[in-house]
Length: 190
Image (cartoon, rainbow, N blue to C red):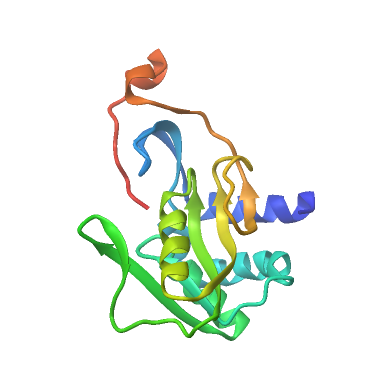
């Protein structure tokens, strides 16, 4: 991504106040002094449209028939991605603490599926989505995210493409640096 594109993406996040600082407990259970609250961006559909316009060229070599997103964080991103690609959109949601396909959503045999997410840190929800796609006889072709918080370290069995790669330090609860330990932890969600 060119530096002007990266700056545009960062400016969209700054303008929507999506990048938070403080002490956060991430979905992974790790702690961080930074948090991307993509819901702040997703309330402005013009900003989401622009972010997906910037992401789409990276996905050109991975044609798909359907976009699948995990609820809640991936919903707006996945829906806009499907709209711009002109394909169907479905989502998975939690049931008994696991992602499941509900609402009579289904895949056709060998249907090509693009998995969409807002932010990926370790990729637990993406891994669940990959398993669901394969279990239902469809074919995952790629994973797309607005932000790769792992800075390129998270890998999947299919290509993983993000609009922005960032690395913020994360810590187990029992290994917090003193400056972070002094701040009360919040769990903002996705």
